[in-house]
Image (cartoon, rainbow, N blue to C red; front, side, top):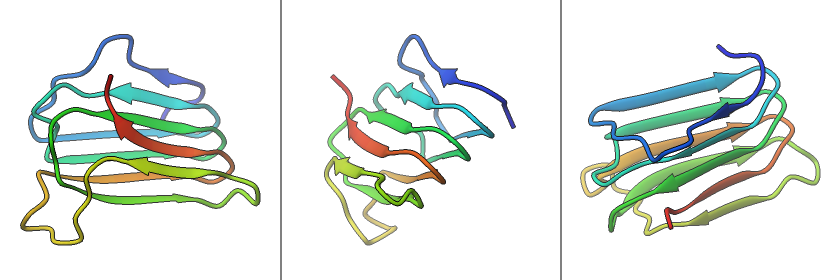
Length: 103
């Protein structure tokens, strides 16, 4: 668990799983194609921004508990775990959550 910002300067190549937890900071990570089979990013006090590569579909579970928080998912999605190329869990207690295609 980190205190502060978690930011990857370059897209990450992860095959199996990636997990990041921040107590009080933003999490910003882009992934190379193929995207990890499981991605989990949780911030207690900050935004979560994930950039995914590939065509998907992705099983995305995104949530924010912020009263005025914004949750945006702009990747091909599925609800079927067998069809998903990756399971993505993105949560923030007080910030915005964005799961987007990597540019």
